[in-house]
Amino acid sequence: MNGSLIEIIGKAIAAARQLGLDCTEERDAARAVLLASDLSLSPGVARVLVDQLYPLVNCPQAA
Image (cartoon, rainbow, N blue to C red; front, side, top):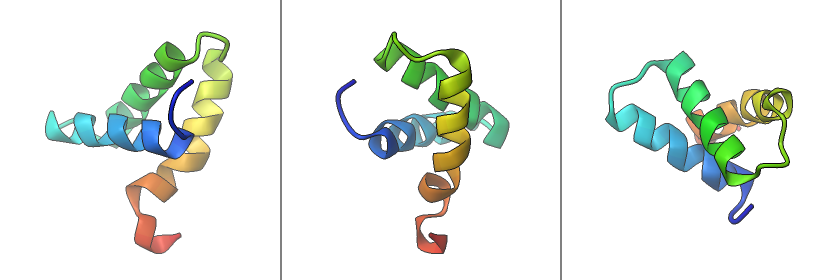
């Protein structure tokens, strides 16, 4: 996987936002990008990573 997890998730969320997707769809998009970036990840691991990092990417000033 190239890039940091936060960077990958952040870019996926930013792209999803530009398309007008809601928060659930943003998370789904981030999971899909992670899974495509690293074929060794399971869907469950991608879900946990996105769920843990989403607040940091979504609201960096709150972290």
